[in-house]
Amino acid sequence: MTDVNPDAVRDYLLDLQDRLCGALEAEDGKARFINDPWERDEGGGGRSRIMRDGLVFEQAGIGFSHVLGETLPAAATERRPELAGRRWQAMGVSLVIHPLNPYAPTSHANIRFFVAERPDADPMWWFGGGFDLTPYYGFDDDAIHWHSTAAAACAPFGDDVYPRYKAWCDEYFHLPHRNEQRGIGGIFYDDLDAWGFERCFAFMRSVGDHFEPAYLPIVQARHRTPYAERERQWQLYRRGRYVEFNLLWDRGTKFGIQSGGRTESILMSLPPLARWEYGHTAEPGSPEAALLERYLKPRDWIGVLD
Image (cartoon, rainbow, N blue to C red):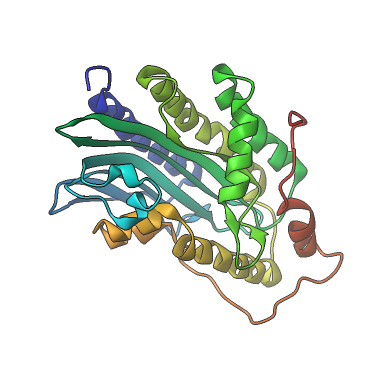
């Protein structure tokens, strides 16, 4: 792995976690992250950081992990059978932020690096990740800002990158059992190795560095919006969809559980409160109906797609 530098990736990820925790604490003004370091018996470990019951954020989790193993779980080898029989290491930062105010959206980001090795073959490595937004009430300005910032993260790497990874995000964050999008998307990529290590690593850094300017201005614009019990109950109901996706479809959740990962850290993405209601329908013409009809549909928000 002469051209591959996992230590540099690890250093960047640790710094990114620190920077994002500091930015969210400054924005909240009350709550602070609890640091929970952990070790994994098979190798590696991480540090999970959780912030709860803030003025702005009901719960936010930002986790760093660097784990190693001798054999890969089925979640990996079913998708990439050529990985069978290889030692592996995976590192990344993953976060999910659940604001208190229903008008402020939930957001998720993940950037990760993976290496698999065996003595008789060249190492296999790739980068993956992205960020996506899950509003409970839709605003065109927010969607435009979010996707414009995502496009800016991709711009130095080619005109085709944002459209391709935007479409991949729409495809990935879809609930097949509901035929619904989880949110308004963003960018998602995986198996990125074709550009060589340095350029792929630069893209990972661009995605990581663009999350804060993509998300915090939206929170700042919405978290003081007055709301009542109706909006809160809708937020909790829609959070149920977030739970359904993470437990039923998310590949990262499946990989973490199947590889013997730390359950508390894997499931810290789940909201602190959620609700389900049988046969719920949004009132026609309501802001809740607008979310479903206008915002939870794949859409070109910034006019750059063919």
